[in-house]
Length: 343
Ligand code: SAM
Image 1 (cartoon, protein in one colour):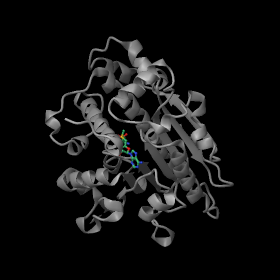
Image 2: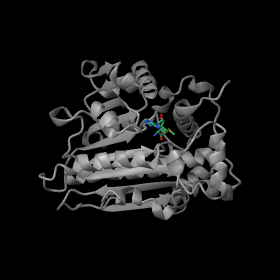
Image 3: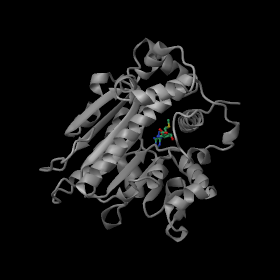
Image 4: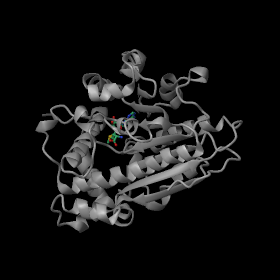
């Protein structure tokens, strides 16, 4: 079979992420009743190697911790919140939240990806009762086939939108998110942006334009007091790709026709928080998956997963995990302060 090229090669990474998740679920690392519905012929897919399963596990646990922390922060502040997942691919997070204890905190959940991916996802949702029943009554769910050349799905909380994030936000985000009274996102509600393994496929300029657009959108609403309109963000990405092992990673991706404009110039660990700080955000922190695994995962959990599969190369695992990082940041509206700490 021929390797996909260009954008098709980038879109193919969504399938990798879904297969990795499926594998980690099957092996007992993670619980996710929804992932199977997003993988066609899931029962035929072979498991991924232990190293990939553990990496998927650490990444997923760390993101869940941050997102759940964000949801409970909203609960404590007594407001509903919004989540926007950029380059969401086949992510199941919405369904996991919407069927979990924090479901009532969620005012809106928006997913954005290439039209080809949203069309595929909308089909999977329509085909699966487990997925579609979570969206609400069918008469409140609408599918639009033409928006931005892909399928768009609007439900009371969940919205699946098609856009190419490399094009300026005025052309990609504004047409699908709407503006003024028609806007999908309420500017006064706390809003969390999730960039899970997507910015590396865009130039730094394009990534910055997206972060700046959201920063402006939530800063233009300064009249609402009381810690509302807080903007949070989580980025999961590869970094330090300029070192010896990083070069191996880049070459492996090149062999699959995947280019990484977002990896140049190679960000170092210390430069990661500047993703947010350069846009005037108040706080930003970063951790590598290596450090998260060592210091933040509950020892009993680590012991549990260490019994799932044999992994003899801890050094290799740590080398890989040291090239992935999670960065998170907060931007408060002027004069507001956060009543509780976020991680
Ligand atoms: N966030 C999901 C996860 O972590 O499971 C999917 C990650 S997958 C590695 C990268 C996703 O970003 C793909 O679904 C791809 O289509 C999407 N993506 C990459 N570049 C994009 C762009 N310019 N506009 C919209 N989506 C993009």
